[in-house]
Amino acid sequence: MDNDISFAEALLRKGADLLEGGGNVEERSTLDFLARMLATIAMADGPVVVHTQHGGGRPELFEEAARIAAKEPAGKVAALAEARQSERAVVFEFDGLGRLSGSRVVAAVLRPEDREDLLEAYIAVGRLRHGAVEMTAVPAAVRFDAAALSQTLALIGPVGMASVSAATAALAHASEFTAMHGHDVQDVPPALFDLSWHAFSLSSARTRLGGLASDRGTLRTLH
Image (tube, rainbow, N blue to C red):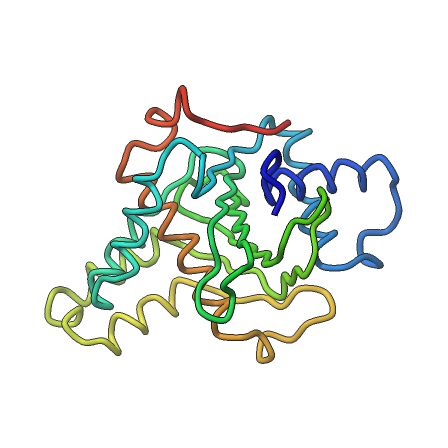
């Protein structure tokens, strides 16, 4: 992997090139769709915030997300209910695990409306070689309503949250999976759904650790 540019930066630059070239995005790959979407946001709504696991200035962000992911289901779901995002888009880049070892993961978390607690995640998995993105798949988008999850948790109470099935049902009620162009949700590997929840765990961790206020001085943004 190139050391002078991150996978996320290469993705955004690719999107900028696609915007300059024009064309019908539906005829392009799902990777191109994500790259172009992020570049459009960067141009229309300001810089895209980028956090990288290595050299990004905030290792505690990824450490906290790992702690959230390791919690029992009830604790993890409760932490996810705290996810908020004031920016239009935040991109997290981190190492792949298991079968994804050796690859990099770019998780783009977007705010589709003027609500900090309604988020969407898009996942790209691949490698960066000589400045070019390779081996990437973006098969689905996940919309997550943290406010709806919080309301459900309040309704079921501590007794309900003691049940793994209740916690899982609450999370399912607050989320929606949508297949992207050319894909079927039923064919999406479970690992990619797990990566979506890790992306929201990073959003929750960022909220817990102070979000943008703590980012100043270490934040990487791309226009």
